[in-house]
Image 1 (tube, helix red, strand yellow):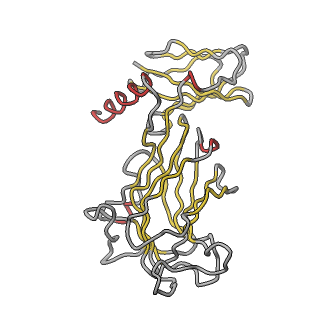
Image 2 (tube, one colour):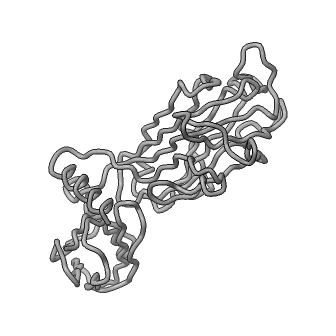
Image 3 (tube, one colour):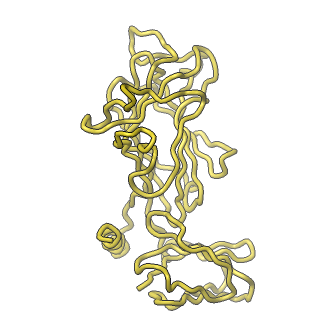
Length: 285
């Protein structure tokens, strides 16, 4: 409960000043049990590996991370030289509903025989992928090249936003280039990733256009009942999300929503009516 109210205090302050970034989901991978390390340490999301790679373990544990007092999530078993560029690496998904100006950051590392080229991709439906760019071949056998990406606006306010971090051929070639200048690329070359973080700014009413004609939410702050009206009497689907991105309510109504079971705090309401959508900040007291 203390952490919950601390988060409210931080976010309330950000509304009073300029919008500030909030961690939506984060993985620090420090759990000694690597199967549990795949769970977020902040927020909600899913994390996995793709393209036939496997976990790179030492005595059933992951190698050191950044800082070295923790651990990183390491993988090996990449495609053979000249095959399957852009298929193998990490994949993870988060919920950015109620957030905009999304950023992605992480600390990568590779062994000397691993590919030094990493490509970043994003999808809002899990099928169509947008290439965000690559690391310019700077992956090294250390954590000295952290990655920080500002994502396109299509990443804002998405129920499921999925990313891939994959190994690619060196551009304009058909071959993987190893990290070590005197090394030969090998499928056992291992990657590590640490401090994987997706952040964003909470969408406020003042900067979010209302696409539902005459939308009105009252009272706000509210206690037990939230009234949601518009110029029409059509059904409205109302979803409420807490500030970790967790959906806490999903109902369809004409005008009234019972919120008596929800804890006091700041929430983001996503309202859908006849194909139109609006997002609003809601305070429950």
